Amino acid sequence: MGNSFGPEVSGTHLEELCALKARTWTGQLASGLDVAPNRFDLDFAYYADKLVTGPVAQGGSPDLLDDPLALEMLTAWARELGVPEEVSQGHATVPLRGLASWVARRFDLAEGPLRVFIRLLFREVATYLRDKDAPERAAARDEVARRIARHKPSIVIAHSLGSVVAYEALHAHPKLQPELFLSLGSPLALPGAVFERLIPAPQIAGPARRGMCPPGRTRWVNIADPGDPVAIPPQLGRFFDGIALDHTTVINPLFGFHHAENYLRSATTAATIAPYLEL
Image 1 (cartoon, rainbow, N blue to C red):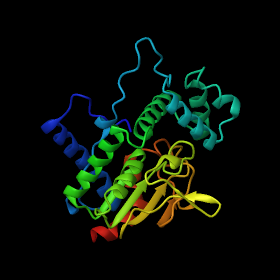
Image 2 (image 1 turned 120 degrees about the horizontal axis):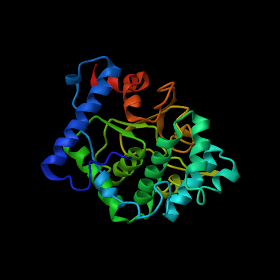
Image 3 (image 1 turned 45 degrees about the vertical axis):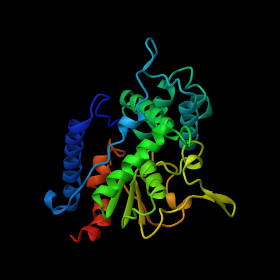
Image 4 (image 1 turned 135 degrees about the vertical axis):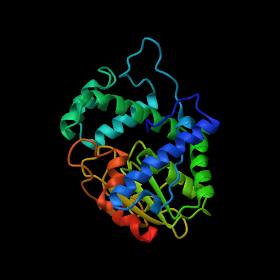
């Protein structure tokens, strides 16, 4: 989310930027593992260009979510966070200011950047999940699957919205089967916004619906910071079958506990992936 290189970037330049991002993430993982970056090989799947939603309408507020589905998802997120009803009901008329102010106080965040983050997050989530047959969804999912098929990694690491795209890509292409699927800061279980819209759809099992682990031999491990406002509700294992380990651990004691770089550098991530890298 928010990782777009720009709508005009394509071809060789796009591959160069993907390689640069891969080197950055390699350095962050290597830092957590306390090894040299050349000890493993990392590729970066880029799909932000598939979810381009266009600029904000001229004259509109940069804080305003004018997409009904994005607003519906925002409301579900606010409900899950425990935002008071008078605050969550006012977000459509007070743009995002009232809601962002409450969340900023609750999680000790800077309110201005948080408003931008919320707006970007729900625009992109709504674009991806709007319809099961949406071309944007298929394109993003297939790009992730294409990179996995080309690189043939033993580990797939997926952060935030990327965990939703990678989850669906692994199900849509069951022959891929990496050894480990590691989800970081994942909103996969968010009711009313993400969970019920997944492909494959969660199935009724007892009193509730349950999602399923990626097919085949793939082992699924999830890591979430308890203060991450995107990784809600916590503990994916309560909603998905087949999760081997479901860690709730402090990634960053200060600001930035949803940031990919902090998850990548964390000791929990290092301990999870090290056995697969033979380090």
